[in-house]
Image (cartoon, rainbow, N blue to C red; front, side, top):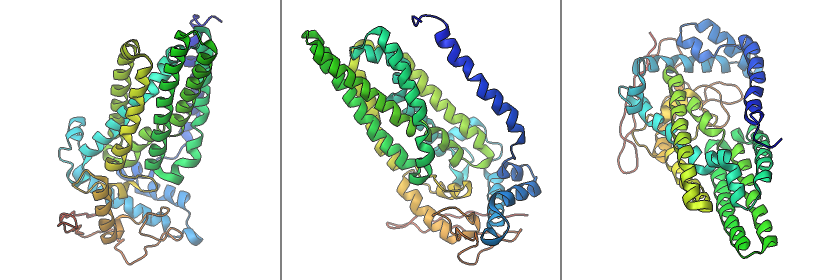
Length: 387
């Protein structure tokens, strides 16, 4: 096949229909989300599903009920503060109060934009062009690009084993470091290869051209194991239940902006800058490290209820949010009883509170007070009540 047949692009698109049909056939047997069931008033079903998931005997006794009470408490709060929010209101945080949905929207949008600008849009779409810059023939660049995509696919399996072990932030950190180094080296090796070819040193040009190809492979492999997953997972983990679907939609908006913007600019950049375009991608990887460190709270092993407390801080800085969260969690154990590894205020083995807390159906007003001076937070109060 000469690479010009329509089969080259028709088959990859058509092949994806097969797993979609399989998913469509089995999705009807999936249980509904307990949070969604609670949201629409089907609490008995929600409690039953939680019981099946968490267990109802032995060491598991109490886990399902504790998580169910968490969900009910926070669902009531979300109805008061997030109900009826439009996309416009979410973007600017209008009426969201301490839920700060506007901040969350900005975080997911810019995470998706940076996902594209760290280089994957350029590498995926313009891989043959990058390989040609590195000195690979047009014919070979086609199959090398296809092989790169295969490595890309298998690299996604790595995050299955690492994502929950090291968390979202550290996954992004090591991804940015690995991708940044790979892009810098890919650009440098390409330039050396171009200079060698201009000097008619074809052996040297081939060696450095192959090295540039290897760096692109490494970039794609690291991306598949890190940045491919987290920007899509993060929106589902940080938005309140009432606006969770819209929060995911805002993530898609960010991806569309980043991907569309870069796709249009890539041919211009490659034409004007050549291999130096890869340096821009590398620089974007460097930028993401302080960005994630300062602005993006860790969502790993935290419930949606805990994320609401985490975003209750009026500060955009992650360290302030974490400090505020620690105080709120200690003051309000009834809001974060759900058992989770390493972060819950309940015993992770039994699901029972570590200290006495309020778990009745009717929750009277609970003050969330945090004093703020040079060493502490601004005083803030929230009222949570089931009627």
